[in-house]
Length: 131
Image (tube, rainbow, N blue to C red; front, top):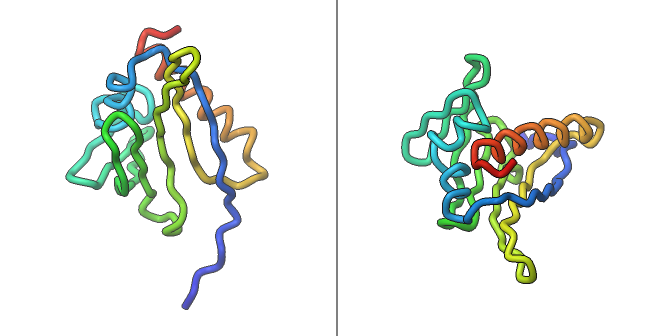
């Protein structure tokens, strides 16, 4: 039986981060880094990451990684073509480090999703000392 197509849409967010790509990558790709800004607690075993918020765990598989460039996760209960990704780029002109987030969400909830990411990235910037 084929599942119904998802109503979620892909979206992209960009944030300038005052950090080197290597340090930022550690915050995006390791349980210790992710638990400082993304989730209350993060555990991993090989490519399986368990993110916990308020004691509720959610599993995601790391499906792609490129050192200091990008990391992609897929939630255990998400369709195969949906994921969330952190990508690091450096601008040519200013040399700024840019965090690009790709995620999927319900278009009706986009303002709430944006606010949530803004809040989490604000915490990331604080942890990196960039505020």
